[in-house]
Image (cartoon, rainbow, N blue to C red; front, top):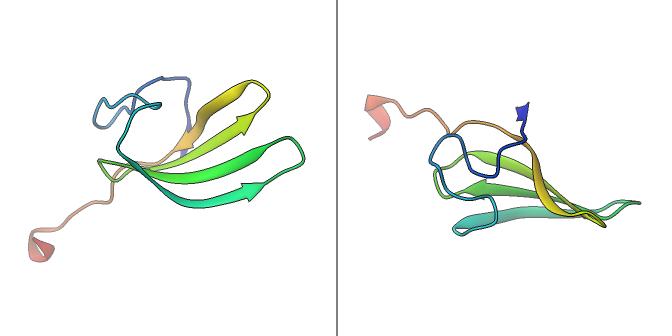
Length: 70
């Protein structure tokens, strides 16, 4: 996973604040909330919600698909 300063998904161009994304898990921390999500394109994202707002702090790429799995 790579950290990010982008406001959109680099894989599909969807805005980070927009839908669709699926919440996988939420974890309370001392400073706020960590939320693991999956973008509509399939990329895994780590979002942090704290006093500064909600932002994507790390993301991976969509899962690779093989011709055999299609």
